[in-house]
Length: 437
Image (cartoon, rainbow, N blue to C red; front, side, top):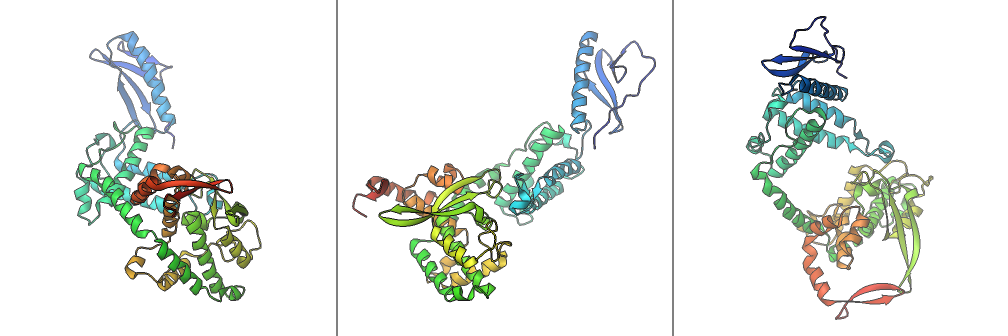
């Protein structure tokens, strides 16, 4: 709601009072110092600001400047008097709510935004903050060290430090917005408690170890491929009449293509037929079916970006196209009917069934998840000698992020660098090892 500024005009003024803008505001003296005063109807109070001068002429000049600034703040919805934490958080969440969009491409369109699940997470984080700081506390009374006790406060709820670190990030995002938009604090962000500063580094190390655990080895991948083949045996003949058989094939070809494309699961589930084509390229005198993929604006994790890339695995797109027999060229690729995406529960049921059939260590299987397909694709590209920049462009991320995430492959890269050579095949430079491997 916009705050309307109305003056309470006087007919007569004292010697130490100066009306400006036809009495919309009054300059007045307290002792020798001049002040500005005007009525804020929206807040039902007088706004008073010191002009920090004893000079009458300077007071008039500064008073007009302060009045214009106040009007500009009012137009932007900024409250002059201090809001409490609850009000500030509500304003922030209302703004965030306007950015919430659906999960499908059609709902997102070209607007970007955040999904409802992310909004709920932010809302939950800020509820914990309000419990800690007290929702009735005034925003102007906060200082940048007020989160010093937050870690111990949340640890009492048996919360892990990395979760607390994520909560602090959400809290500081809200504080930054309140500082920029509402002008209710003297600082943009709380200082991160010292005990949390190590969490980012340790999380990166933990993430690297997690990625290494979640990545198929070459032998495990081949075992999984055989398991998928066994799981979908005879399904092609049944797919025309049996939805379950068609789902099995869908999951198989989804996995095969994911391991070649490195697409995120969400991107691949949202892939439309209009955005993928297959072309034959010649390599080593053989025909290779390459998929040309366009990832729609708003589909990727980096929601403001679209990207286009080529990858191997085009034959899996063609085989699935023949099986799917979708009526429209604009529906979802990895869908039973082209109109609705496969329910996640159905996908995971087939995933676990195929993984169970794979002939490798059960303890290893506990770490293998659908995202392992992306990890496997990236690891194979790194091992093949592609640069981080080349890989990142296709993945829709940064070269720095690829380097950090797949740090565990660096020893193999160093070995490859020490022994690297190349030869040209069909006009393409192919990396080789000096020992002929």
